Image 1 (tube, rainbow, N blue to C red):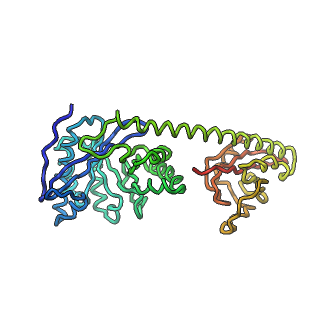
Image 2: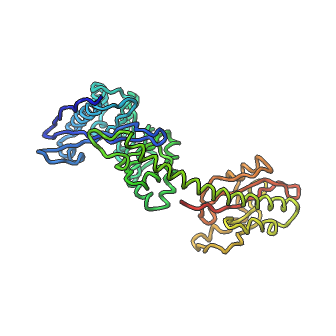
Image 3: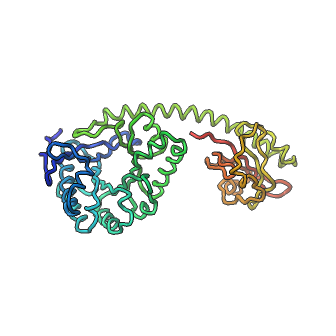
Length: 401
């Protein structure tokens, strides 16, 4: 049952209002949080939240405004069902400048009726720069039981050291990162790696700025955990519920699954043909056929870039044998990397897996080739040639998204 809206408060001539925007979990298929957004005005004229704070004279006033805003947000949050949902609150740096301010903030939130475990305090990533006191105050709030989110990650000079130091529960990727991924394939390929990096740190990832169907697909592909934006739901005093939101997301999920299935079928067929040719090459080598002739089945495959042999220590024997297909244009800027004769690849997973399990065909994860900076996977297998252990390798092209 929806309760009546809280009375409209004021502070230093400002009229305070609250809108809420759902933060939606892609795996759970439901809203798991609400971000409270300040809607301030003066003399009936709307004010940007930044301007509302900057119009105050002192840090103490900004801190007091923060307390008033948080209390109003919580009263609004309590007017609609929110069981098992977080409330995301944006923090002004003034509330994190002194331990006394942080303690007052914590007490104010608890007195307003929310336990710390239900509240995510958002700290702008750039605010952490060279502010050890702020970081210490954030740690105090975490110790009090609040969740901590770093906001606006990916803006300007984001610093992984600061992120690691703060040990956030969540990291919110700035909307400009998503815009870049929508327009540039390199950023789109990088996004899943950034998500994985945040997971390694121990933080869940929220991708903001989801505004189009394409944005939803990019978010799904990236492996992020939570999404937020106008396509999910616009901010409102009484935001949309999941009966409206979930069908929109499910349609995009189905589209992605169909696309991925078609891509996997194509890739599976290509890789199976490459595996068959690889095994033919390995057998021919073990039977004493010279490498150039033994590798012909592999080098005739359309997606095979090159074959090469390593000794038992991971050192390359001779030069690469390149594809017999029409060659891709060579980039003269990469000429210093072309000759890999004598290179040591012992730290590569494809060598280590092969040498640990002789006779077993291994396929690496996609990676950037150091020879020509193309995306590839490497097939590898440890075999005996003239009673000595070798590792046969073949790089197979992987198309970028």
